Image 1 (cartoon, rainbow, N blue to C red):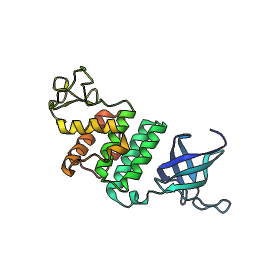
Image 2 (tube, rainbow, N blue to C red):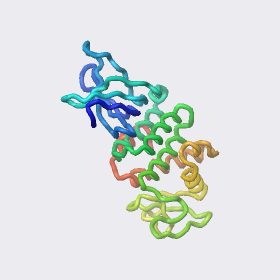
Image 3 (tube, helix red, strand yellow):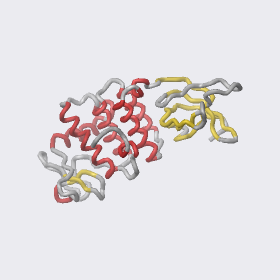
Image 4 (cartoon, rainbow, N blue to C red):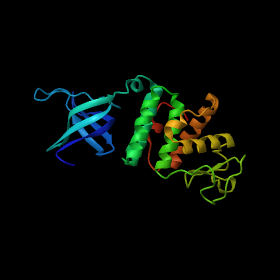
Length: 242
């Protein structure tokens, strides 16, 4: 990274390091995942505020001790996300997946940014469902919900899927390694398949009952630890009971 860097980014993590200073972890499609210190009170420099989940164009300066936040042209602060427990938990999960996966592809940034925006106007369970589905697809960690990723057999229209704990994906009955503990009904499978076909933004308009959305939400949270090869602290120590 050059001495001075500037690019689009979101504050994906913020940690207090001194009485009034914070260590920011930025997620940027051009700079990658980078850490920068935000000085809260220093007479020699102008204080720049960058709360958690702030999105904007960040200007960073490289010094002897790493990167320092110089300025930010704010696009959105996503304040509503911080004011609600379920929205905060959702955003924590998104950040956890990105930070653990260490990927900073532009497509993933677009998904993360869109999901934060959507939390401010959509049902949080719908946003979480669509984020997980599209995140796993981008990372190459999901099937397509049309055929079994283990044996390759095409699913029948009304087939109930099992789950493979070793592969981390929904599978046909014959390839189920969990003895029916994680079942995906045909209507839920059709919904997830259609979500992948539409993309994140358009999939938010799919019609589904609140009850069905909640079941799919719980299913994805229960299967995520098998699907994603990393420890997710947001699920282990978060507020949701799954």
